[in-house]
Length: 217
Image (cartoon, rainbow, N blue to C red):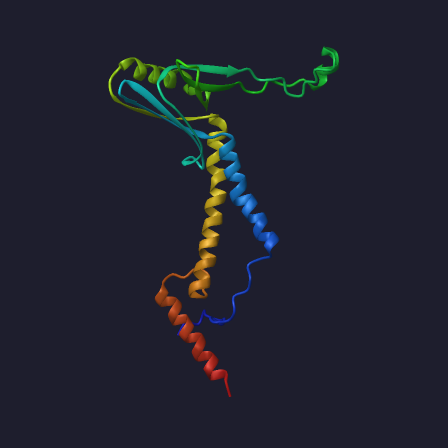
């Protein structure tokens, strides 16, 4: 006998929330983390030399590993870095310097892109953080100059700060998946909400059924 079981196992399962609540949870726990990691993506760059031609594939990923945008270019011959200077935050170009002074703040961060191109001028790009510019560019240049068949792969982040913040943010999705998994498990096996085993769930169903039978006249 399990004295701590005090509820009916086979009773109808109530809905966990309204459609609007479920939609709000999906937006917060799934869409927001996906958008965050897509805004500052991890880019996976893969170069392969075959028949003396280098083909590069650049995949931008959200959730660190799921590609949402892919670029490919053949006959790659050069790599370079393009940097876009940050802009003044809180600065109004239509006002004078004296009028802008009370609202003036720091410049925003510089943004950089790794650009791989061929002799025709075709390009593929990957956003890259300034901390890994030199090592990534030198590694790709060394592979291009080597002249031997082979492969070279590297992953770069668009912004290291946003990348580090992505880890706690993506935990929201992990929590959402856990909640949904528990809900499905409860639907299939019945209470308790967290079924430690199928055998335990079946035992609790039998207890509830016996109590229901005893209560009948």
